[in-house]
Amino acid sequence: MKLETPLSKRLGLKYPFVAAPMFIISNKEMIVACAEAGILGCMPSLNARTPEQLRADLEWIRQRTDRPFGINVTIGLTAPERVAADMALILEFEVPVILTSYGNPTALVKEAHAANRLVFHDVIGLAHGRKAVAAGVDGIIAVSAGAGGHAGRISPFVLIPWLREELKVPILAAGCISTGRQVVASLALGAELCYLGTRFIASTECGATDAYKDRVVSCGPEDIVYTDAVSGIHASFIAETVPAGMTPERTPEGAKRWKDIWSAGQGVGQIHAIKPIGAIVEDLAREAHDTLAGLG
Ligand SMILES: Cc1cc2nc3c(=O)[nH]c(=O)nc-3n(C[C@H](O)[C@H](O)[C@H](O)COP(=O)(O)O)c2cc1C
Image 1 (cartoon, rainbow, N blue to C red):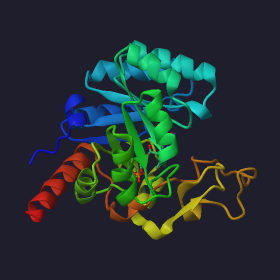
Image 2 (image 1 turned 135 degrees about the vertical axis):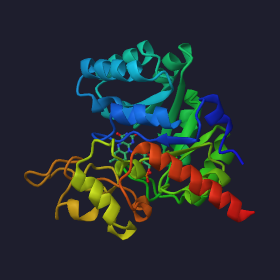
Image 3 (image 1 turned 45 degrees about the horizontal axis):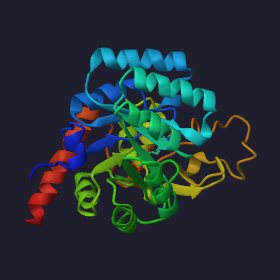
């Protein structure tokens, strides 16, 4: 059986996988490695400190690949002028997929659709999903309980089929996918793309420090805390990196949110090695095929 969905086919991907955008640590090297591996690589536009840096990154990527990739615009967490500047670059460099999070995507969808681009919007529940569909998005990123970053509270067993049923748009499954077995489960639940963040922290190309990557490999799901102490919005972090008594208003001296306080999801439990992205993707595909064969 081919690992293919209508959306992976439409995007021209070899496999229905996305390397999800991760603040600070996703980079242009990951995007190119993903393109070469046949999946959709992504990064938040804010990982480039300035629009000038984003332009340089997009030029660098475009010199190396003409395959699709995605840029994440964190609407509500980003100054409107920066959103406008980043969108102009996304359109100029013909980035085919825009991932929106933390805000109302209506204006971006209009701009993106006028240029024939796709927009996928990140939600943790139905109410925001309905608003995003009304705004015209092309797909919903269903962020479940246990995901890395700003995770939801609903089990993927419910969230994926529920949002698909209610919203009737393609669903991207985000949260706790680290193996091919979980890929098959996500597709069986009705997802059209698997959106993996934590698995790709432990990749050679990722911009995380070696200590962060090593900890992702060595820790288990019980080491992950779900707390709003770091940013005011509930997110998943590796427990020992969250300083005691931390609140959104009070960051203990020296601790930098997201940089020193490491985010990862419960999917850490099944990550056993740091590998190049190409090898991770082939592992996922092989495991998925083995799982399907085992199911008969
Ligand atoms: C370190 C880290 C940073 C993240 N930063 C962002 C971000 O800037 N924008 C965003 O939309 N999602 C962000 N996410 C969420 C991911 O895009 C994705 O939804 C999530 O990692 C999927 O769950 P998984 O980590 O269990 O695979 C982040 C996740 C992690 C682990």
